[in-house]
Image (cartoon, rainbow, N blue to C red):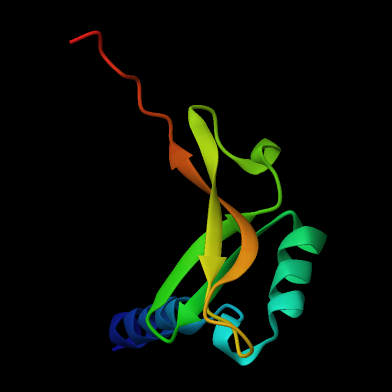
Length: 96
């Protein structure tokens, strides 16, 4: 019985972490969303209740082998707010 209780406790702790949400861009102004990225340098934001991504203020926040690309997100006051950048894998072009 103790094993069952411990298992249930561990499972419920794990689902709490999954339920944590990030700020939702469509509930803030474009300026507010850009400020969050600027102040934090890198932050995960939800762009809808089911989608999210990591946004950065500058390339120094990307992993080795990644480069920045401009990112736009929907906010309460605009459909395409220039929020900062996303880190994407650098693609190496072949000579073919």
